[in-house]
Image (cartoon, rainbow, N blue to C red; front, side, top):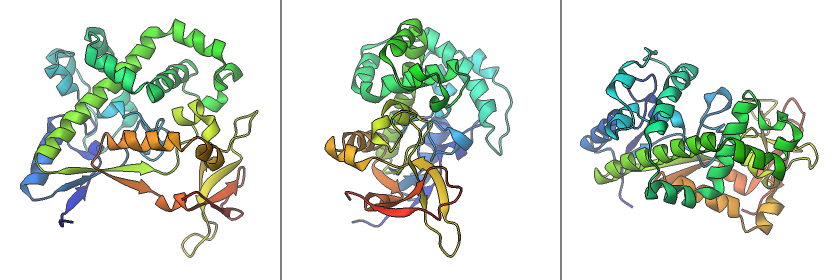
Length: 318
């Protein structure tokens, strides 16, 4: 294998006039700088829509992209925004990301772009290819907004448990909102692939990152509760993830993510994991799996414990 070097930098850290790094021209210039200095790898944290604490390791979906990384500048070039709309963007801190400020500033732009967007064959093909996760994610985002951003496990039972009648009412009553979230993911997908192609053309490989666990408050857990160890009636975790006590932490680390139901996953050919890794490889050339050792065994802690002391190692299929 040829020796190479690179830099770890999440796209949110790139310079930008929009309060957060994005997939626009500054990202393309960053790739050019890497290539010009013989850096052949660009490594980054996960790219999903951030949830609790805005951590890329606690995403609201393992399959979706973070809308905040969408470049308004590229939307202007695509004819979906006007220069005037972008010029009215509020002034935001340049030395740190004000996530709520960015979210409040970008969403009106995305909605303006959505109004100008004419669905194409390419958009229809994207929705068809990504249907397995896209429809669940769009429903999750629409319902979460209707429920004042409460986590899914605090929604009314009919929505929490995805009762067919309740889901059908959302699908029929909020078609435009569901279409909006599909559009946002389509734009993310196209902007990212444009950036990745530029990187590959310049000889720079993208090194992606995938967290071993998915977040409890996520479209993954809501749409696929059977892949996790959850109580059948309450859908609350039976056991949660962490690591045992060691020299650095006498009580261990309590991460709180529900652990996987590996018996279910194995009986279904690991289909969810295969789809998850395949989706991540659509965004990157190489893939780092955070907490890779979890595929051999994982530390499981009884739900409700305040530390990880009472956990145990549980063997995995590997």
